[in-house]
Image (cartoon, rainbow, N blue to C red):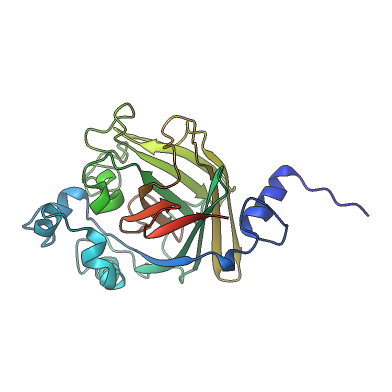
Length: 291
């Protein structure tokens, strides 16, 4: 009996490392270095709160050049607990909300494509009403090419503002944005996203507003749940080539952050990472080495 694979099915198996040999995506992800990054529940902590000294004691250190992760990396789970419980900057806590999720992050490239792999154990469901009934999980990644002010310190927080949707009293139609952001000047974040419901993938950007599609860099985004463990793999052309796509080059580093919308979450009710660096054959928090 002969077996035929569709291009999509074959791409899925290659990306998830399910046993099909490939000269592109790593055939054995266990041989690729992993960095454990804790994503945490952020509550109501837009960039305006982060930079206001009377609210956030770290604002002074931020002005001196300190990074958010440099101050908080050892206490991310505790921070998430305070906010998820409603004891700090969360006016509408969700009972049972996971305060933090440890995620294993891996990266590699083959000279043409960047491969990003995320894996984590699913936290216990809160039992709360489903904000996004169609998608149990969404995973979004943002990349930035050292053009947005403070992006190397605050990560994706430069897109998070107090007047954006799901913030208390905010306009429900207003999306994430970068202050002064525009594509022409390079002041934007490259955004890719995977959604679990129908396996959708989106390739967009955040500049003066968030645009979910228009990029041409994302080749595939595949995810699966094996027991209690989720795994999501993005395959993204280094060159990009579309609207809002950052051209990634070997020897360069980029600002990197991601968010997990766990338990059917929507809007700000996600778990997010601090800002890290991604290097393409370059020293960084996460290194994508050529395979």
